[in-house]
Length: 324
Image (tube, rainbow, N blue to C red; front, top):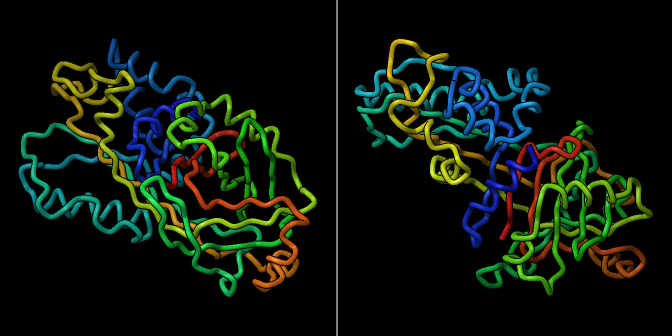
C-alpha cells in the first residue's frame, strides 16, 4: 500500500498542503475489484499493486473503521442524494465532516460514484504542553508565514534517525500500533526534489533505521489541521484505472442487470495535529527558557519547512500527506 500511497501523493499539487487516506481508498476499490472482471479488474489490481493483499489483512479494520457500504440512490432527486450522502459521512466521521456534498450537487445522469471520507485526530502517547506552544516562522514553499509550533524537550518515547539527507521522527499514539511519522528534508534540499525522489522503498528504509528510545530529541512541529478533497478520479486515471469510469466496464459482479460504471470518486480527508494526548511527560515539557538553554545537548528536530508525513501502522501508511 505504500507504493500506492506515494504514487497518489506525487499526483497532488506540489505547493499545497494535502492529506490522503490510501487505506480507505483501497478499501473502497477492493470492493469494486471483487465484482469486476476483465480489463476493469486488471487495471485496479495493477494500480493498487500489493495493496489488495494488505486490504485482506485489514478486513476487520476496514469493516470497523472505514464502514464500506453500497446503497442505491435516485440521483435525479438532488435533495435526497445530498442528504443521504452527507448524513452517512457525518455519522461515519462522528460529525467531523458534516457536508461532503454541497447543496448544489446535482448529477441526475450518474450511474454510480464512490464517496470516501476520513477524519483523523489521534491522541499522543506523550502529549505536548499547550502552555509552551508559541508562534514562530514556517518557511513555506510559497513564502514565510507565522504558525503555532508545539514543542517537547528531551523526548524519549519516539523513534528518530537521520539518513539520506532526511530527518525522520516517529511519534507514537496512545494506541501504539500507530505512529505519526514526519520525513523532514534538509533545509538545503528543495521540496520538489525531495518529493520526487521519495519512494515507498526509501520510506521503509528510513523507518527501519529509526531507532527506539533515543537518548532524547528536542521536537518542534507545527500545530495544524489540513482538509483535502483532491481530484481523485483524475488521479486514479493517471495511475491506469480508466475502464472503471467508462460505459461498458465490467462490474457484473456488482450489478448484473445494468451497464454500471463509476462516474466519479469523491475523497475527502481531514487530519488534525494538536497537543492532545494521554498524559504530559514532565521530562519532555519544559518552560520556554529551559528548552532553549538545553537545546544543544540533544538532537534537534525542527519541522519549520515543508515535509511529508503519514500515520503509519508498521511500514504501511494509513494516511499520507505533505505540509507546505
